[in-house]
Each structure stands twice: as structure tokens, then as C-alpha cells.
Length: 274
Ligand SMILES: Cc1cc2nc3c(=O)[nH]c(=O)nc-3n(C[C@H](O)[C@H](O)[C@H](O)COP(=O)(O)O)c2cc1C
Image (cartoon, rainbow, N blue to C red):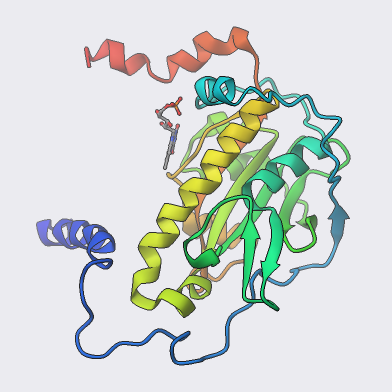
């Protein structure tokens, strides 16, 4: 690979930041300013094979000590391979993408996470391995009705998980892997050339809420940016142009006795004297 190629990629990455401050050449209007039709607030069901999610979380043992939850949050990559309940899954989805209300007739969703211009251009897909009451396979979250829809079973689901997370095979024991896509135009309609940094910033709100929500009910997970988006798009049937998967988070059951195995992930720090 040439030095120029590397330089171009680095410049493209840095460009995401400068898009905020750089004035456009000449007159520029976003599609919202041009009064073009607004795209839907969420993706339409893909199969319509829906499962209702429980919305009563009173049966969950939730750690309500906020500071304790903040201080206990950490990345977990070792799971005990137990199933989680539908209510736990529902709670995780609610805390990360749940729709609390709609602003105007259908101008914006107000969700449990903040989002630039309330665009929320994300979709959440799941590889479900071990959730009580749900057949293992591929799912899609429907935030407007707080349901999941079954997209289909998959032979070698675990192999797919490790592969789409760029060979991070520890994730294969998660109860569920959340895959986040961006539907670009949902943000671009309002923000045009300024949309993309906002999308990346907003994705952090989702996974931080997921970390905290998982911690508050005794589960653990780890954000994963090293996603093979091309592969994941193919698995979930996305075109990779208008919508692409770019972020993921495996979540599973964890146990304190696994701390040593967790620490092994960072053994290189000691070995290399870092
Ligand atoms: C955007 C982002 C991407 C990450 N990607 C990965 C990843 O691909 N693989 C991994 O093992 N950990 C990944 N992590 C987890 C970080 O390594 C972890 O948050 C960091 O080491 C600090 O540890 P802590 O979360 O326990 O505080 C990621 C975290 C974030 C926020």
C-alpha cells in the first residue's frame, strides 16, 4: 500500500472533524432547508415476524445506586454462557433506543438517548444466541412499537459473530450481540455535509447507555468498533451504501470469578512493560 493511500485515509478521517467548522464553497442548503420530504423516523419492518417485548421492568433487579453503576461499569469479554430473559433484553433495548415520544406529527423521535437534531439515524440488529423465549437467530429492533422482528435462523451463528467482529472470538459466548447501523439520509436530510460527525458522536450515547444498563442488571458487555461492516451488512441484508453496520456490542452473563480471564486480555501491557 502506498504512502499516499495512507495519507489520504488519514486526511479523510480528520475531515470528519473539520466538516463542522469548514464553510461550504458557495451557497449550500440541506434537503430540509430545500423542503424535500423527510425520510421515515425508523426503518419499516423487514419481515413483520414480530415478537412483543415486555415493558414492565418492575420484576428486574436493578441497581438504582447511580454512582455505584457508574463506578462498576467496565468492559466484559468473558461470559458464563447463561441465557438472559426477554425482560432483560427488552430493558437493554429500551435503555439504548427506546422511543419515549414523537415530536410534532412525525418530525422526530425523543428517545432514551440524546441525538443531534433528534435524528436518531440508527437501526439495531441482533444476533441472539441465548435469550429465554426467543429462537436463536437474527433479529431487528422496531423502536416505534418496542418489538423485535425475527429475520431468520442462521447455521453457525457463533462463527458469524466472531467473523463479523473481525475475529474477536470471545464474543461468540455472548447471549446477544447488538449490531448498530446508520441510515445516513435520516441525518443528512437535516444536516447535509455536517451530518457525519454527529452520527459518530451519537453512537457513543447508545453504547454508553448499554454499558450502564447492562451493569445495572448484573450483565456485562464490551463495545466493539472493529466490526467488518461489509460482512455484517451482508448477513443482515443491508446495502452498505444507504445503510451500513459500523458498531457492535456483545452482552452476556458475567461472574466475578472470571476476572483473571478478563485480565488476560491485557496481559500484553505487563509483558511489553507498557
Ligand atoms: C468506540 C470503542 C470501540 C471499542 N472497540 C473494541 C474492540 O473492537 N475490541 C475490544 O476488545 N474492545 C473494544 N473496546 C473496549 C475498550 O478497549 C475499553 O473500553 C477500554 O479498554 C477501557 O476499558 P473499560 O471499558 O473496562 O473501562 C472499544 C471501546 C469503545 C468505546
